[in-house]
Length: 404
Image (cartoon, rainbow, N blue to C red; front, side, top):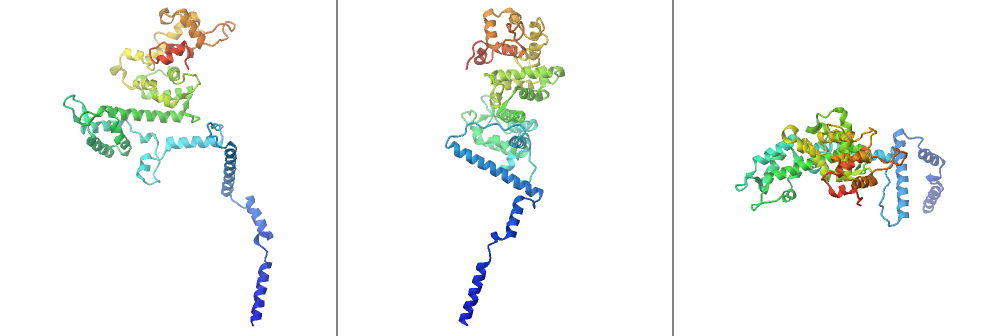
């Protein structure tokens, strides 16, 4: 009996050894080959398989480049080609962030992720919110007996933060942080004036909105604006600026050209054809442009309008308004100014040496006069006018002597 059992076990063991492995079976190999080719998969599965293959190839390529580069850090990244997958993904990411970015407040409060995303501009305080904040500040402040200024201490600051959050919403909470309170000058009692704080909030909101608008116009997302992009930004501001609402439609294009030129004169001193958005936001030019929000007939005098480069009066005087500056100097009406014509600028007070030097540095040789004569076009004339004004002496000196 023992020997029979042993014989049976040996028979089973030998049978198990005779069964071939699954990988050697013909039908298994055919099935694997069929699935690997993707012939039996649906369209979605095929697309997913192809996506995985592309991503794997990209990953292997990056690994190979990293291995070849060694420890040298990457300091240059080539811009994606127009219409490529990388370019489309970049544009889509910027669009989703600027237009449909996830609510910053909801992320901080850990609210439901199923809520409808909001625009980045919707997270900013609008005009009604700013008015409501100003009312809250005035109703909950104290009057300084010595100066009559409206001030608040830190306890008032926290109380106003709670009131504004209830009336306006959580989007105003970030302005009432302890670090913001410490930014302002305090008196002997540890109080700050409410007016500088309110102006800080307005300035922050204005710059953030400008940054969003400029980023939307930045086609290649490199943080710089080209002249036509800056002109498009200014064109979008015109309906919101009180002093420019009545601008003639025929003059809008020329105005945008003149206004954008000042930004590039100061923010692009090396004439690369693009201006950094951060420099534009921090420049005095943007602040000067935003001054046109004031109502001209009540708050701004004629002198202030004439001194502001972005005012309609100034632009029309440069291009062809009442004084007809450029057109009046262009005697032969060929669209450019010769040295003799430029001598009439500023009532003929410019010296010949000054004009010669300006032409040597900033006027290219043209085809007029057999290629020997040089004349100043409208763009160079705008540089000349900006350089002869009071603002920005360090940039203004480049009219005569280039400064790196």
